[in-house]
Image 1 (cartoon, rainbow, N blue to C red):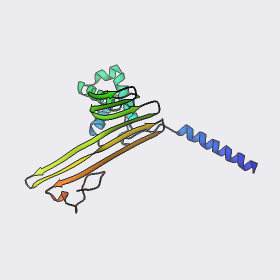
Image 2 (cartoon, rainbow, N blue to C red):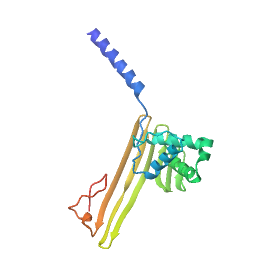
Image 3 (cartoon, rainbow, N blue to C red):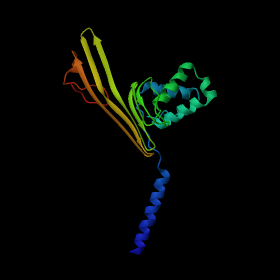
Image 4 (tube, helix red, strand yellow):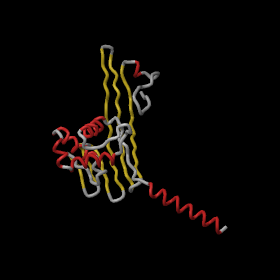
Amino acid sequence: MQKARKSFLFWTFNIAITLGVHLTAADLPRHTSYYRLYSLIDELASYGLIDVNSAVKPYGSRWMQQQLHAVATHTEKFQVLPQRLRREVEYQLEEFALEGGRLPESKLVLGKNAHNSIALWPPEYNYRDSVFQASIRPILGMHLTMNDRGSIDQRWFGASLHSYIGKYVALYGSLRDISHTGDGLLSRPGYLNNEPGFEYTQ
């Protein structure tokens, strides 16, 4: 019995050490539908400023923040870029402020202290302390399709959440209510919509 217990403890210890060595920080992927962000990453790679494995997407938020930060802080590399790309790098660094260890700067702030910020432009709530970070943003949008035979509009609203708890836990949530209205066949209940990520509602 004593030998079995020692063997169990030995293997438990070895597995724990092995897992501990291979654990990496959790990261939130950014969906590939963020064309503006992925185009920026590709452009920076074409300038030779960052190395990208474009066969493996989506990229992680922390990885993208690190790449953008490395470009922005390397003065010689940053000055090579056209002004449009420099502005885009600065804008995206604000989008990844929580991953960079700070609260984002906003143009129209309702309230801000050391741990919280509430902004109207861009609309978001951010929280950050030594263990927990979170960002909640509203989602609002519309697609409108029109021709001689009528129109179809698709509207959606909801919220998205990005959060990190410690170093090894990352949470993402996105809740959207989407509806179709209009004269065309695609707005009728018998047709499924062709948009990814949600069910058809009327």
